[in-house]
Length: 408
Image 1 (cartoon, rainbow, N blue to C red):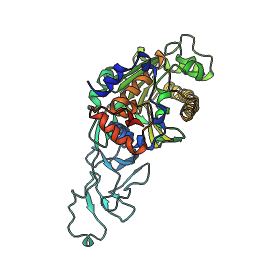
Image 2 (tube, helix red, strand yellow):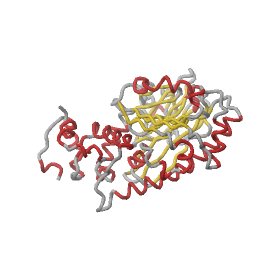
Image 3 (spheres, one colour):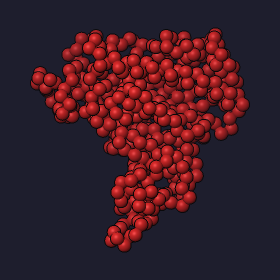
Image 4 (cartoon, rainbow, N blue to C red):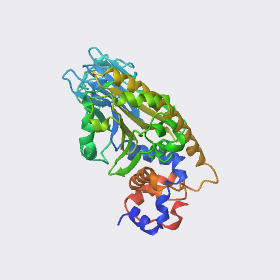
């Protein structure tokens, strides 16, 4: 029996309603473990193949101190590399998104790379001696394309392939023909002053919709259902309320969305959110698909990165619906950010005694269970000394019993 199972057996049932302890949201050492074990070893959404439609197109993304560049080669293949010149470690691409005509040129000293990552040549090559152009090429990153979305993984994996992980929901998601989607605009990055887990905690449950999100409550509040994380994937569903329309945006959105003949009839009144542990969501609506993810910058700042995609043959009704859905999402986003800030700051209070979760907050509970399974040090109620957190986590991961004073 592993350490987490032992802890679960030892706790009263009421422990199931508790969340991660407050110290895990404000510990620099904890964040370093999360970067290594959660963000580098799990699949991360990078973008979509149609973000790089032509040879030489690229985009970049920074995740947990690693930097990636995704580009399409002359052979049409989309590849992912570390955005790191093999000479001095400079970014080979500084822009968020762009196009290179013939090659990638490092802006520091002018090393030149082909679109397949091989080194074409160094500036003043005679000063280096022999340089093997493959050995000194850009370092590849593990990648997988699933339904048009590009996933990357920086370190040896915790998860199975994306296709295996998402297989349970693949049949229903296939109806959206996501591989054919095109981006509405460039990636959107917003930095907010909270720990990344506080953002995910709010997003992982719909219990707060009735109180905090008037537009969403009007749209689908009576039908909303959260299905918790299982084997790294979650799903939340909301069908339009029978009498939706108190809000102007919702009233007009429902009319436009139901006029969409490009998705099956049973999906013309559905918003669905598919979560991929630890930090990403693919959200599908009748007229568009988007992804969003939380990327930690510090213990108290998080970048929310997102992008929206539409059908290339978008109809007028879809365009109108997408505009109105964006209005609804924009208000919901503002409301969620405030909730995240309040939740995150509360954990520094002397009065905070952990969460007490509802049966309607299974998404939060299951996400925290997944974190505990990877990082068992988070089962410790008392905050360990910062310089001992990594060692304690290693010991618990290996199944060692800890003396009572170990968490002090």
